[in-house]
Amino acid sequence: MMCNCNCRWSCTLFAVISAAILGVVAAFLQISGTITVTAAFLWVTLGIGVVYLAGLTVASTRCRCTNATSCLCRALDALLAGVLGTILLSLVLLAVGIVATSVLSAVLVGVLVFFLWLTVASAACYVRCAADCD
Image (cartoon, rainbow, N blue to C red):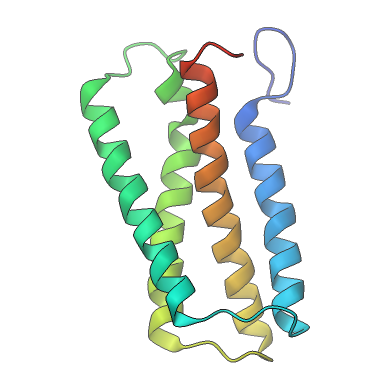
């Protein structure tokens, strides 16, 4: 169990759980044909991932993780996993193309949404910690 000092659930754990739920929902909606994923969406997710990676690089060069309790160190693992997963899955889906009724495409879209939401939620955890809202 991951708890912080006040024995509440960690923000990054909440980010992972909410990202998993959204990923499963997105995969189900993709396979049922409720949503479609276009190349424009994939290019936007790739752009979001690259921008977050650039921001994370700048933030990590300005702030060194000398202690494990710094805000960047708390959210760094989830941020890196989300950003790199978003970039990788966007590139894979752009390369192979998406078939609306394919189970594999639905799983890949679900994983992409998982990583994209993990990126956004982890960035929110970092901002929350940096603003002393814990």
